[in-house]
Length: 264
Image (cartoon, rainbow, N blue to C red; front, top):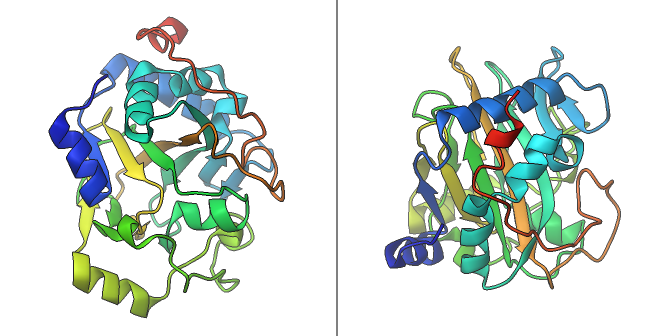
């Protein structure tokens, strides 16, 4: 899938693009079946809300062949390679379930953790998101600050052990303080990232973003494949493989019907 000049320009200036309905309903159904399977796992890669509901499943491409196929889907590999001008590998993958009344995600940059904890040298990576639900203004969409990636890594970021989910999800996250967020929003504004089910998000991993609590009964599931240029690999191994890559092999694009072939 080749990007237009306008899409490439928007990505580089704003920090992200959303391409609606890249994946058809039958492909989304295959991925939803995989979500149902992996969220019932009991391993340490599954982070849960206090009530036991799944919140995040890390390393999804390592534990289910349907997610592994997604990582090789040409609709993901080709535009990511185009934007990074490089072959790519998966640094981290995850299923993010925004449950009704579940955890908020405080303001952060994905690269903040990948650089400080995993030793990823440079912010030459993309947060690829696949929407399995319609993401709208009601069900706690990701909020992002356009242009914030141009500031580089936010030095004021810190680990917050008082976060409710520190023992599970946020123990490696570097949160950005409110006064820094206020300055960034004043300079650049703030936007919600929305789109129909099957949409594709391509976001620079240095964009500042977060999300609030979902107070609706509407589910909000996003699959994330955070990819990096093949010569920009992590140099430390503090975290388990389901958090951060050990396999730096370049992703080879599969056939366009690779998900449909895995329909049960």
